[in-house]
Image (cartoon, rainbow, N blue to C red; front, side):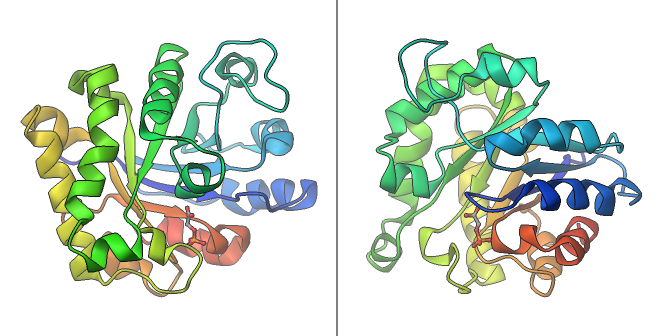
Length: 249
Ligand code: PGA
């Protein structure tokens, strides 16, 4: 079975209205291969501009976070219902920057994933180990600790609607990409871990690699058996480079 491939742009707190329009114009006319999805995740204020300017059915829009509650006194937060209003389809959850800087524990991430799914959004669930964890041989433990609460909360069947992004924290924004060998081995571990709950579901889940992916290193990474695309930070802010990455799958 061939899995869906995905290249998703995580703009983080970067970009502008101008970039939002230009990125859509730059990508609208591209012919992507079948069963390939491009997702642009800009900061929330640009979501509706991206939605309005997308004219290619293989490109979708995603948010970078939601609150785990439906609505209420949560100043500064965004609800899944608001994303529904804008017809946003995806949401990045559990990014390491949110885990490290905004106290998104794996349990909170699990709640957000559950709430996203209940609201019809597809979560892009990010997991990844720190440099210390990798060096002390705790990568697999860390990844399983991040996955387990989500599986417990939503059930393995629901992973049919989840995208998992493996992003080693030490490779994010550092220019230090994981070697293709490390990336593939870790993706294989993640798929194997999911297969321990349900082998069919594990075969269907798109696994994305993230961490200093660029137009030069993406081809080799995307060619690995268990890597179904990428979650792209810095390079997703450059139109021509991001286009090349989208076409490299
Ligand atoms: P990077 O970021 O490509 O700039 O390393 C990836 C991410 O954080 O999603």
